[in-house]
Each structure stands twice: as structure tokens, then as C-alpha cells.
Image (cartoon, rainbow, N blue to C red; front, side, top):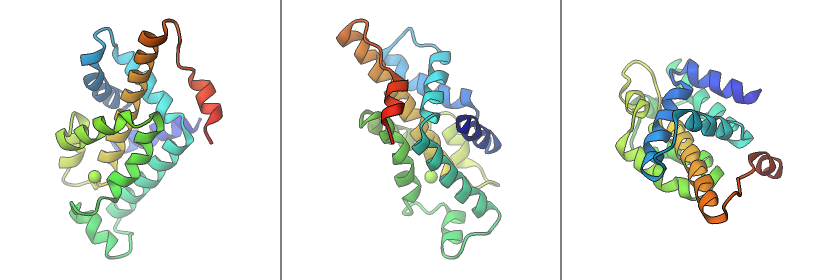
Length: 174
Ligand code: MG
């Protein structure tokens, strides 16, 4: 159920499952022309099912919300208000999500950080809210969900009927 909580927190910050899935779709479509938005949504949900992903989201979103309320100690409060480009902790935190499905997500994460695809751009340009962490968390989420689809695709081509078993993987992860 914490998967649903993570989803609610994202919604509270103005990000829907569909918006994250749209980014995944754009990342993976060149490699898989039969891909559907529903598959992308499922993949985002699978990533949200990982406890380390949920913890990362809780942390980043809490910092954004505390900054909006002016409750962080200085100099962090001022850094968050300016969205200081040299801060970098937002990207570092989001890497914790990217790595859940291996290093393949790293390239996509770098690409999204540069291109600010879809909802990431709106978050980045928002004037009244503070989204220092959220834009990177969404990029991390989309990159991981995209990497997950890439792995499944590769497994299907390399090993015929072999399907990645998420439940088994989840049981094995700490
Ligand atoms: Mg950021």
C-alpha cells in the first residue's frame, strides 16, 4: 500500500502516473514500436513498489514542502529558494531511484535532466512552488521505469519466452 502512498504524494505535488508514463513512453518508443502507455504505467508502478524508491520520494518531497513553508534551516532554505544550480543533492538523491534497475537508467536520467521532457519542464519552471527535488525524482522514476522495460525487452529477445520476474526480484531486494 505504500505504493499508493507514494502515488498520492506525487499527485499532491501535481504529478500524475500518466505524466510519468508519458516520459517513459517517449524514452522507450524508439526501441519498441508496440509499446503502450498502459505498459509504461505498469512499469512506473513496479518501480514505485520498491521500498528504496518510496523512501527516496518521501525524503525529496518532504524537503520541497518544508522549503515552501520556509521551515528549513539556513543556508539550506535560501539554497532551495534559489534552486541553486551547484547544489546537486537533488540529482544525487534521485540516483537512488535510477539505480534500482541497473546502470542502463543512468543515460536516460542524464538525458531527462538536460531535455526536461514533459512534466519535468513544467516542474522546473514553476514560479510559486518549490520543486528542487521533485523534477529529479520524476526523471529518476521515469528513467528507472524505462530501464525496466528495456531489460524485459532484452530478455524477450535474448532468451525467447523468458520473462523478468519482478516479484522474485522484489523478494530478493533488501
Ligand atoms: Mg532539481
